[in-house]
Length: 127
Image: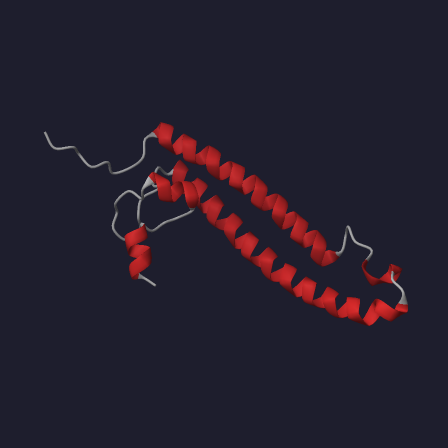
């Protein structure tokens, strides 16, 4: 008898993915808060405490650092939004289904990229 292809993950499998996503979300939010603190200098003394000789160099580095931190914070926020969307898909029981082919995305891929919405074949073809 031929094996019937699954069309969605079981509730137990979805619960496993939900746990994984919640852990990643917690870490992502902590990282985001850290980046925001870097940008706003809430946990930093900045250049006010340094000698005038190094002030110009530090201000330049500080600006560059703020820009980089801003970009990283923006990427982190996008990652958080993708993880939250994945949680919604889990609640709707549509998690892990490729939005192009309608087939299940392999568990191995979802463990690495838990917010994936495309199977690897489609992702590779869209490059």
